[in-house]
Image (tube, rainbow, N blue to C red; front, side):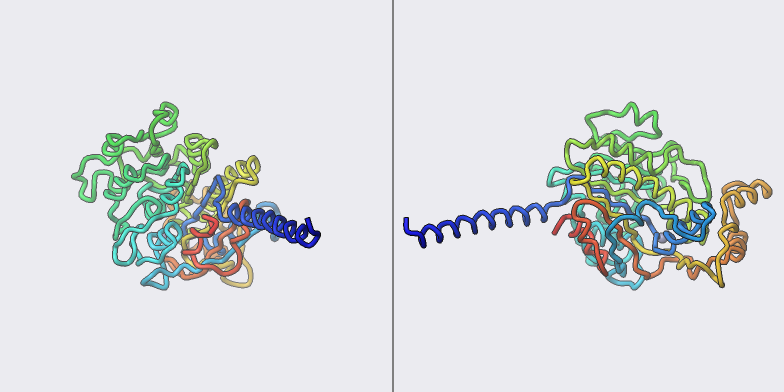
Length: 406
Ligand SMILES: [Zn+2]
């Protein structure tokens, strides 16, 4: 073989090898992680996160430096949250934007502004063989979880949305109950019976969960949500829940297992409720509860670091909380122990009147500008496979594609 010809062949061969290598790398890069956790803190803007961390620092006797787990993630993007028809989104449109990667009108669940169904990331991944778990600290048919399995032009079509649990075929659902358990007017058959008759095991409380049917999809509802419109979770220090969000995540992991790939959406839903009421300490408690669930995912990530992606974001900010409303803020005035003392003295545990709460905020020098959602950008923290895609200023409709590795 002539030398020049040999070099030419060698060159082509090497090019092929390097091209194959390159293609393989690109192919792998375009693949979603095997295990995906998407955490959505409803109403959790940077203000809610910052006040929680500032409170933690106060408890540690410091002026700063304490962090929740997810603000230590290496990647961070800031997301715009407007909906298709409003500067300020609701949880339905924002949930749909995150789940389906498309803007829609406020109050729309999993459908576009014209009411045409959109496909959520949960369905995309389910079709690819992923097991899917959808869980929340609030009702399982509330807007954020609903956006991942439901299709309805009204977020308040709770009864029909619940029925879509069956149509989804997803493996695990968890929540504090069903809104409109017997339909809007209370005249319909109980929705859990419909779900059970169509192949799911609806378990109320941990005991029923332990005895669940292994070969069926599971809908876990906390005991206090049995046959009723559900109560609150951690907000206001309410102890009505028998299962915490972090424990619900563990239940989801138990059902999904780690042999097959999975996608989990876990919502800290009560952060929003506390922020609507401008209840600073309840916000702190709910962000910490949410963080406990994220820590469980982090433990899983540490066992599967090359195959796991964790994204922690919010659908919107609620309340416009600021630290503070004056020259400094005084965390001791929102301290839980202090609130508890207040409750004991007033004989009314778990209930803090609006005026009393406002008084505490004034003493603590915490600023709240609204009792509704705001248009502030929200963070998306990420760690694990593909996490580097979360950087800079993005839109909430970009999150789906980034998780899918597109
Ligand atoms: Zn809200």
